[in-house]
Image (tube, rainbow over all chains, first blue to last red; front, side, top):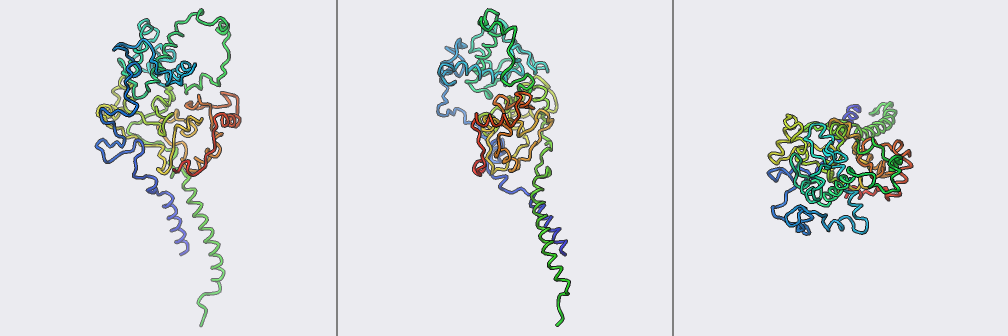
Length: 214
Length: 220
């Protein structure tokens, strides 16, 4: 008799241990939760067309469209200074951010130096033009901004994935890449020229094989 | 009147107290430990999805950064599941007719959702925020494991509360430099020549990382 009881209690414990209670799955919506209410079953609802949130009127054509008087902007928008914290070093911060975002979003196709030989291209993606061809060397910043925003050819638009300020930061970094790939020894400050032949060891704790899993 | 119980029942009744104690203890232990088994936590069990997406290929061999798809991880509580548009960015050209990708193309054509099954599904009485973890120096790998070696996504860790607390009590065991958060297989000894204990203690001070074990940190 006692054995039966023990077995029963043990079974009960097993059942209790594996049961999921209502507290685990509450009738509320977290991101990506399915909703039975809407036809497309998404709990996250798209904005009603024409909705403008406070502070998001996006009047500044230069900043949001990369255009001045309907033409691709030749300059970077003034609003970026505030977006990157102002002060004397906002441009360095923007460039650093641009490098960071470029490496995440662009290198898979465009390659680390922007020559269009990224890993995805090596696996069959259409090869994008190098940034270092004459046409792109001469293209204004607004052109690059527009391509990131609206896509071009096989490249899908990136406007959902890269914020406006980050797109400009990427453009700035592309400009830096273009400079670096067409630089001569004369562009290197005299006191650093010796380092070209005697590179300093890496100090940031990065080894090539630990960078972003590559 | 004769005795109802024989004399041996004295011994039996005493013994039954001991036996009952043992049985209760065993049941208690079993209950606790059953919750830790992979049978209940379903950890290390690859989960079949509508599309058999492989992180081994996309992260391991192509070297995509985690944030290429999980764009919100630095700013939001949710890392974000990419829209099928992100997939189509490459797969409108590469593998564009592969039958395995039909659910993605269908989703893109009809603006419907690909029904991914959530692998790291926390109970809904737990508040979790990705952004604070990655911004304070916890690498993706510390919780999600070697994603670059998972052909199908699985849960590396139990996500039991004791597992959360093991790190919340002593976060220095897992802290990394902020430029190595998204790196897979990062090793402080190889990269910096420091042990995790040395590095963790240093980063904990530098980034003001605190142990958080108040109930309301997660249950809010």
